[in-house]
Image (cartoon, rainbow, N blue to C red; front, side):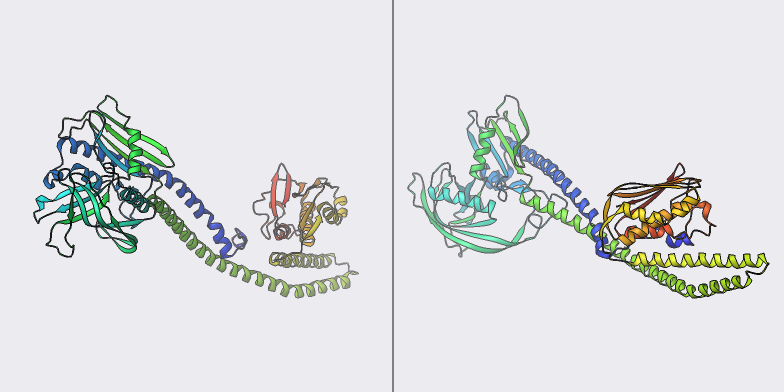
Length: 581
């Protein structure tokens, strides 16, 4: 019963202290996940980039060697399809789930300044035949016959126009760095009907910013547009072979000529040229090869090169496909932090629930302990008076019977007085233990531990001499503590040593700024596991009326009051009590 009541009694704490300690694990888990999610994410993105580039490369080779059914049916140039798809660096639904930021979870050419998807084909001289370098594309229809549509473009490499160069530069800066979209409305242009090349004449450029993006289907998104600027561009050109073409009012759907699907498509020219300068020199004699190159700053190039294309209608000798990916692009970073945040929130909620449950249990346990302590205190106080009366009666009877020759009667009276004294000692120490445990705040000062130990040991000098025991104190030390409570702890430890040291044995005390250690020689080794529990004594002393079994409990409570700990051990018939400060 006694073990059940006192075993495993926890140090009291409140909910917030408990929760603060519990949060260590969620923080460690989140740090672990955060550290690994970046490396796992990097590996995942690289694998997806390599896969995407291989797919793009195979499609490019097939398109060159066999043609494209779509291009043939729609009578469109191969560059249009390449430029239209160049916004993609990796188009996959990526890490675990979609954030709503678009399906291009890892990166897109148009969203990330460091990412790109460059492709080109070259002839025997190494000159580019076609590529996905950015152009301004427009589909022109001069009648309602869909077969007569023209896929036309303005190529800044062919005709140098300052206004268009500025437009190209600002366009890629805005879409890559500022999340700004562009909308073009062409009123008139110059058209070369033989080459399907154009030069804008009158054009309105509208800038807008998406505030909210909503996924409509697997490949479609809608957003709330917010216009942030409109600019009219007028270019007067006098190029040979070009004629001026004015479009019909766009509010008149049956009027021609008309321009549709107008946009600036393709890879940022500066980035394309940078990639081209790197990979145009990779021109070995083997049929094809590829690999990965780290560009630094979390950027990697995945490239595939074919230098032995089959005979084709374009006269292409080889082709190159390069996917440049930034593994720390904005979509990836959003998902990294989203995963880390989810892990932190879930682990924090688990810790919170566990702490709430433990706090409820602790409150019930503390309430029960308080009830036990109050009951014990009340019983102890109530027993003191009748015990004093019994002791007084026994003492008076002994005085009255002292002249009597009835030794048996005197022995009974003496036994009554001894038991009353023993019980009174238990009650006094029980009240002292309760008082010590309930004291919350202490006034602390610098205490000389050696002087305090000598003062406490002096009280037991007579007992030591009678039993032929020696007591020595060595070391020096001071500690910041409450002198009364520390004296109580040391006094109980010395008292315990005096009681249980074998006759003619020795007690040694060593003090320092960090610890108080008392070692005494005993007749047999003692199990110290439960000795600090109230009313627990050494195995050979359970019936010894000189001990209440409360001394070590009081010593521990007094040590804990000062923020110290009491450790007990017994080895080679030497009992050691140590206060760690």
